Image: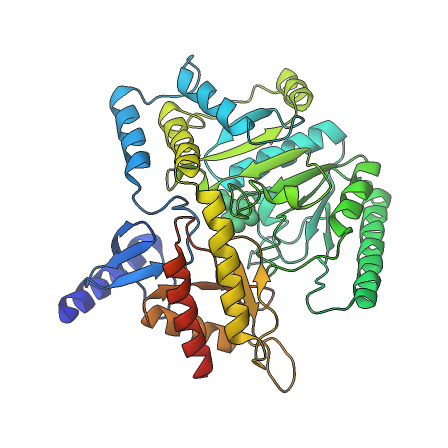
Length: 430
Ligand SMILES: Cc1ncc(COP(=O)(O)O)c(C=O)c1O
């Protein structure tokens, strides 16, 4: 069995390289060849099982029968573009918009988070008459040219757009009250400087775009008042607030449906993707009625696959399963358990600062016990050791030094306990 697996994996790797090229990324030093999944469990080609504590696309669980049934039934009935009247997309739009506050009452569907963000930026430019973008200096929001020219969290060959102003998202983890207040003041002063610079160079401010959980940045804990101050300044400059909920949305936070609800600032536009279709490619841009009406009156906007009946069936089924299986309260309870147990096991470990994150999204940052510098090598080793021990997690952060634990919402108490046991043992053995 093992020999077969090695032969299959080696030849598949080679064929992959010959077709997809050598830079199409793969996780792990020894890539994992998966064949099936159920709930939070994955099965590899050699029959071994893995606890999935990383993937947010299979939001309600791998191969969930309700999603598979909804998709296949609709596929057998009708699958075409969206320029015909069909109840599925309207039913789904109503259900999705019901999860937002009253000002976010229109939706335009897409096929990915990148498309959702690209449309959001296009709309913000249209509405504000400006082209300047304010972005985090360590973030990722998608694959389009506009977004590549604003990408700071991974390698891109495009130079940073001249219209892009970068801000460092302040991290108050471990700071006392006085230090946090000082950090808040300097971070908002930086926002003022960036806005002034975009204005003096003629770009003005079209939008600020960020992930309310700041996950790529390493799940940083912003000082209270930071997001509100940032948004207020952007609005005063005539720009829009775009919340990228690709990572933070759909109940990831457990007690809240959307990450932007963490703050006292309502987005003008919300974008979403990954978990939305439980694996079926689906994204969306949500905004207020006036913005969509104004934009639509001057732009014939049509996206062939977006919101087609099959995608709508998938998206609607995800919302239904979340409600039927009580996945948000479960995420809240199991996320709290995970953080509590990780903190109990690992508090005092000189290599780790406090356990970060919110809801069913946890992280912990590795630093060198002597120098205090970021320690990506240890984080990588822990991720690889967890993989060898049958648990999938990953890394984020400015130096890839923060563990990323972000399981499907179907994660249960026993899964959290298993993960904590394995992780504490592996960290204890470092
Ligand atoms: C916060 C965030 N926004 C947008 C995207 C892009 O989404 P997609 O890959 O579906 O285009 C990602 C993908 O990793 C993301 O993490």
